[in-house]
Image (cartoon, rainbow, N blue to C red):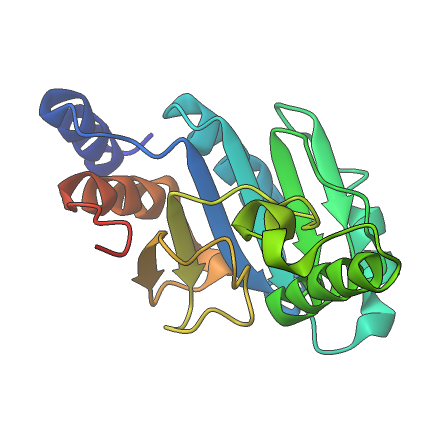
Length: 202
């Protein structure tokens, strides 16, 4: 760890700010094509758990769905500190591991699938439409966890990321591209999160 990284780590300890239990990182398919991209992911997972995260979600936006199987296979070879669940656009099995990876499963698609499932149950008489609430939606999402902190690298846009789940998340944008993302960038995100007063839509 460099001198500046140690300084940031010391400030985090000294300030005793609240840290996020659930961290989400938004990257792109193009980011993963850069040399060392998966090494950075391994590091990011370790940083997150080092600083008290309970769950880490990575969302990979994909332009060409034909690339999804290859990207998913790449995750079989990385060294992760916790159990990992990887899901793609054709998956409907809920992710429940400490590390969760969404590849090409956009928020609109995930939400639409959940609503379609509810509609089918109503049509079959299994569900009263007047009794549908937010929990019914969440029960049908592949990634039900609501991230406390969402980190987006490279640009200030979310790339169709977890539309339902991130409605009250704190968003942190950095112009640092994923290939250059370092521990100091992660620590900066934590410091910024600790300074915010979360309002949860109020």
